[in-house]
Amino acid sequence: MLRHLPLLVCLAFAAALAGCRSAAERYFVGPDDCVLATRQEGTVTTTWRLETQADSRIRVVREFDRERAVLGLDAREIGKEDAERRGVKPYTGMLVTKVAADSPAAAAGVLANDLVLTMDGAEVVYREQWVGVIAKLQPGGALALRLLRGQQQLDVQVALGRALTRAVEERRIDLDIPPTPVRAYAGATLRGIPADACAAMYGAPRHAVVVTDVEVGSPAWLAGVRSADVIDQVDGAPVSDVRALSDRIAALGVAGSRMRWTVRRGDGPAHDADVALHDYQRGTLVRVPFVFCLETGTFDDSWSLGPWGLLMNDQSRYVPDKSTRETRTRNVFRAVLGLLRVETSPQATDVRLLWFVRFSV
Image (cartoon, rainbow, N blue to C red):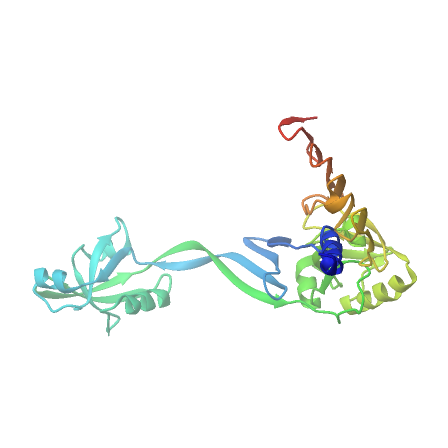
């Protein structure tokens, strides 16, 4: 038994150390999809949306009224069963299934169950051919149809109508990525919005830097900076390009200086963030096996007394809520094998005694 004592001591020591959790956890909060800006010019609406699912980009969505040609009929491919009923070969034209009342097709005499053999002289037997011809029709133009009604072929000329429809066009813009700093001093991931996109978004040439995500508990987070914020000013001056701003953050971070960022999310109010730059990722770790453990980190802190924290332990971490600029925490305190447990959150304080008596205050 005695010869195994050193091994048992080592195992107990390792178990005691394992009883303290690691405080190296980092938590970043970024947008799923959010609107940076919207501009209305007449009937044209342009929206710039921030995307960060893969590479950070801006999706530009342009909505506008577009005039389209109106024909006024629906058709489908004629398969084997329909062809046998009509006494024709399968895929002989397109079968008219519906003709809208008071439509150009109705005015030209097209009827339901007619077979459209050609459109402007081109055979149409598949859905893709039909859609391709319809897409090229010009409002106010004309369309020549050759129909099969019963066993008789008819040639009709359809004077196309006009209608307005809401059209959508999309494109994506890559953001400027600054060099990765050796150390993090602010805790916000910054991307530059290209100059041409800035001019379109804001109606004038300017620089703009957007926060694509922010580390919970970092100096930027504590100052109220949140993902999807656009930095308008730095220390009262218009923001420079993202590379120059990143260099300045790194230089001031070494000295532990402060910066004031004026940020804005979408059309919301401006927010002045006092960012205290420093190498915030350094934590504190104190372990006395079986007696005491203290760990501090960026996202959360904890301390415990007794083996594996059974006597008392406390854990506090920030609530990663990007909907508010306030910094809020969630704290859980346990004592005497969990006989007392107090959980404090931004919503309420929950108390549990003797494992089963529970109430909120």
